[in-house]
Length: 322
Length: 288
Image (cartoon, rainbow over all chains, first blue to last red):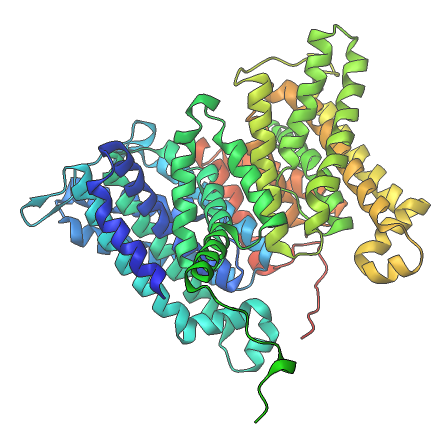
């Protein structure tokens, strides 16, 4: 249980080590990570596949941005609004999802994501369509988050709360019921799990987190436009949880960092990072199903065993006679 | 109105054509591949290169496309799909999405982002029937889609290989016990399906022009159409494609054009709600 605390300590110390640009990337990874955790909660735990999370992400980004720009809603309230709208629309989309199995759900959610994208084009008057909207830096009372490190700490705080919230969900009843659901729907329902309700709730939680991620994303890059929220983004979200590690909270963030940082590392490769995402998805699933978090875990175990200098327990036959 | 219906049939046959390969592969192997559109575009690109860089006759270029489709299908199944064949829906969805990225990236790497014109087999003419007009290309796509649907169905129905292929999804283990070569048959399914994808690529490229993103919009529609038919009914995919095309083009008369996709998806969501396994799909029973 030491890993999260070490991670948090490193995260708090980071702005003193990294320059503005890397800080910005990590902040972005934080926003993506919130989505990633939500999607992992849905897919990693209950096995439901969503290819429409870009839609919820977009809803969060636009709701919070428009609320602030047009109606002067304070930032904190705009966040709450975006979470609420993600939750509500998630319930609306999740309701039919109860009836759909794996692949059909993937297709239906894909349809939802594309419909959102189209709707954003349609309501150009409010969303700015392809011209987008410029987003102001967030403000809480009189404090303006207008530097990379301020923004970073804001996102870090929200990420921490998110992790705490999801970790609790996973550890307690809802999480265990979801795992039961993933392993066998029929068995779960015969043990008294209200399957339809649980599925819809899981979907709504996941959607709400995706919207929160979107609401954070908008001020980080200062600008949102329809072109950001495509099917590509939905698939990129899926690649985050796969590469990071299915069903792992920390893994979700590792995946987000991977997705954000990789294009930077591949600058010389001419923007072909999608090729690498794709390869990573395939390789992880074929050769290393636990993803990055599994890799981390293994290296931690190895280091721990070095430090502890564990002697192997004596074989049974040499046990002292009593 | 009549013209709208004709346009709808033309557009719908594009979705149907792309859906057929998808449905064929899914029907045999129970894997719906998200990379199908990219495989199809890649095959079209290969034909283009053979035609333009090697100055081969057009017929040879078409054959090269089909061969490329078959080879890609074979490689995809052998290298990527086989390890996850029995790992469940999530694995296959993720892996084929990964393939989608990989093949797309390869296309951009090799051919760049340019948009290129593509010659059509059916020429550039227009055929008039009384009040309505239809481009020869579109008519060709429609006829090809129909022929392929019927051909694949007949192949499955009346050939020995087809019989063996149909046995696989019924009972993998039993089929293997009866001496069917599962590996070879699965390979066959992917090769045939991708070859059909290549046909789609060659016929659709003249309509959309040739570029690395050309198959994304049609693929999404093809998936929708395939879902309508339960993802494993060839006839369902063909009919579903035409129906969706007509619905889209007729509703556009009354609503703004950019809502076209949304209408289509709402329609599909409705169908899936009424029939979670698609209109032509078979219900699966679960065991604990």
